[in-house]
Image (cartoon, rainbow, N blue to C red; front, side, top):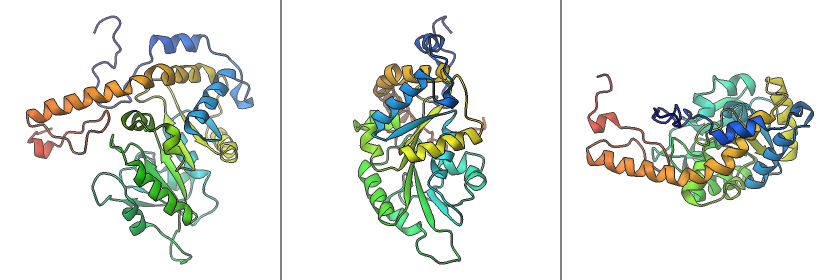
Length: 302
């Protein structure tokens, strides 16, 4: 490893294995030190305002993790049980967040296997949504879409149709947009183009953007007011948040614009691997390549 190379330079397990850039570290050293619990930190406020502007949402709130953003993002839409959340069976909010929906939201989950094997469609939603007032059921109150899902981009027209169906039936739509940055970079649609179809969106800055800590939740002013309360309840009411949001702002300005190049390199890698018989499980739309070991005839136990 050369002296100016990141420790994560050759780490391919996940895009979570990143290290902050020198400009992020410099920004952290020069951040403001206001108390964010009292909403007095200039760096944090500026970051949240920028995310609100980019997403077209009314307000935004820094979160310590994407998990916290997801769980609070869903929770603000739920009043009292019985209620359920519909999502992809692979969705992080359901499968990878320590049963948070059950514990924090007292919610049943309807995990759906997409018929196309790739991403949820309106037909999937219509088949599995729970509507009506049958007292034997837990009505669907939130549909959570993960964008991207395993690096795959759900077409924006599909998101639009699901959103319109949900809202017509009094259902809120949350976006686990941990990698919505990637989706925007891959398609050319803005964050606001996507977020117009969601009632809340949680995004990470510590994955492909490379900041050391955190994420951000964007929604209405009322929802963010509730989210701030829930964040405090869950131990996320940190004081000098500026040292973290300073790095997040640099990530937006300097790293996000490089994502198209990262995607292009991944697609080149995919073509090179397929040329030698290594094929992906799902389409390579962004920066993920999952090896289909069976079709590639690779024994991972060796």
